[in-house]
Length: 142
Image (cartoon, rainbow, N blue to C red; front, side, top):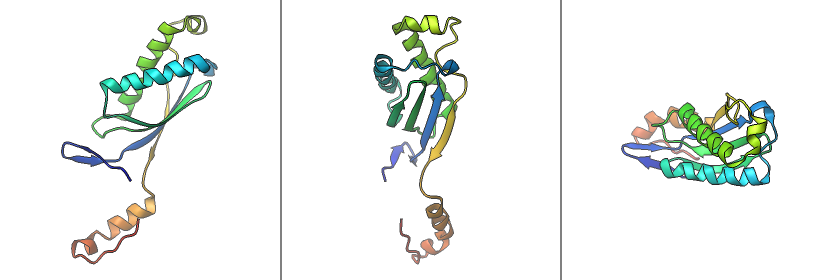
């Protein structure tokens, strides 16, 4: 299990994030998909502490499995990614101006987010055993 470190913090905050194209248009075809992956990596130049574990792109939606440090709000991370990729895709691919004529972007407004983490039972046993652990009695198996 890989843990991440920042000043005075150790974390493993993983998220599964999904969002769709506006009107569920199937615009994320081969060339657009490749360019989108490049843009996602470019965003990391500005936020090197964000880590993509997996990127999944279908024709009308995107899945990100990523680690976001606790100093960032997930909503702000999603906003930054969607805003930057939408702008880049609209500039690069002229056909998107015909698909999305109103300049409101490529992505729909909402998104789905779920945390990914350690098994709940492992956490429960760990918390319950803290009193014993302090006296050196607990033996945990992860």
